[in-house]
Image 1 (cartoon, rainbow, N blue to C red):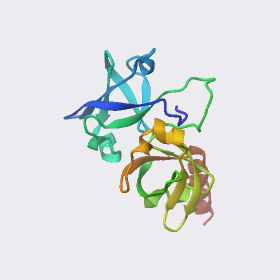
Image 2: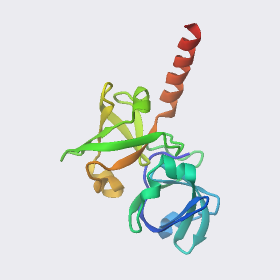
Image 3: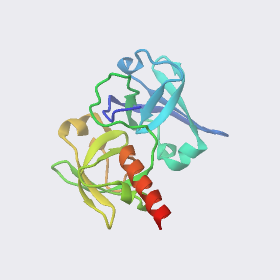
Image 4: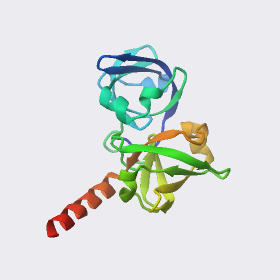
Length: 201
């Protein structure tokens, strides 16, 4: 599990496709490497990945074809920065909200305002899981929905200067695509109500 509080942004060192998907290698800082072991879970741009190799500061992850199909990680280039969060421990402070690292879809950046307000477009199948003042995670960053148009699926989030400085959102451009993880509790409630209503009907 993760909290949506990014610990660092790190560059892509290598991306190699293979028969099973691809291997992604990132250059970790010494601080991020502390106590990191093969088999550990790490949130990479909001995607939960498993460490498969550690060589000095180079940390590698295997990506399945499913991951390549459902995320933007297959489009990374060497030198690109990605958001990183190590998994949390029981008893750790939850600064954002609980995340699983399971991407539900891809949102597209529609608008950037100078005051840090960014507007994104949700995919159609996620519209029912988002509401104003609810939680949402974008590329692993825990955020609050400031405004939401239920009809179009466009939503607004606010980035403070510190978040823009310490995450990849300081460099995103209009049209960029980001990973979305909707709030799991909201999704569970909506889907449960839908099943109950369907059974009644």
